[in-house]
Length: 200
Image (cartoon, rainbow, N blue to C red; front, side, top):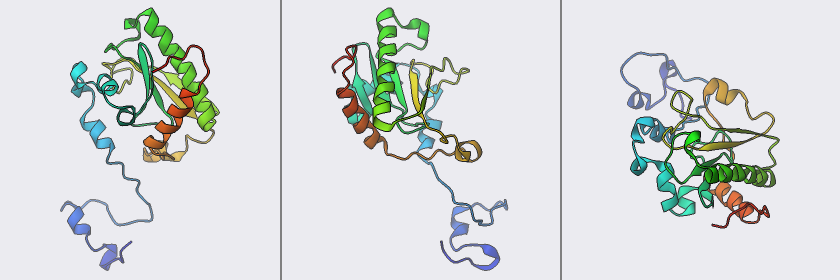
């Protein structure tokens, strides 16, 4: 950190602050900046108006690496959450652009369930979580980040992963890059011996 000037003001501070005199004396806290979240904040619910603007509809048309897909099934696929709660946070999505769990047919329902089970087995092999959160947030008021396209969350959990950072600082420390996690999960998935597993 640069040496402080008079009154605890650091050289260059004036260039990155506005002229409103708010509290802002440098302190001992470090900041974990997450500017990548801005893309999600700016491109939220109102941006997904059809299949053409839906990231879950677009993903299968890209390479697995680009779209973070770890498995392609017959009626549904599995990909990493771009904004994970924990490393290995997976989403199970039907290919069809439907918003509600009551909109999926029997084949889609069965495959979403089977892929969720396989996801849990694969994540146990890859990262040894001690628990999981599974769930679908239905509708905007139900907390769905993208309410227009159904998706099931599979979140691996470990003891102590809910520390003060997400609660106090609204910051989550993720231990691996998305690319590393995708490669590990996809490799483990391809070796899964579950007979219900479909071949991409």
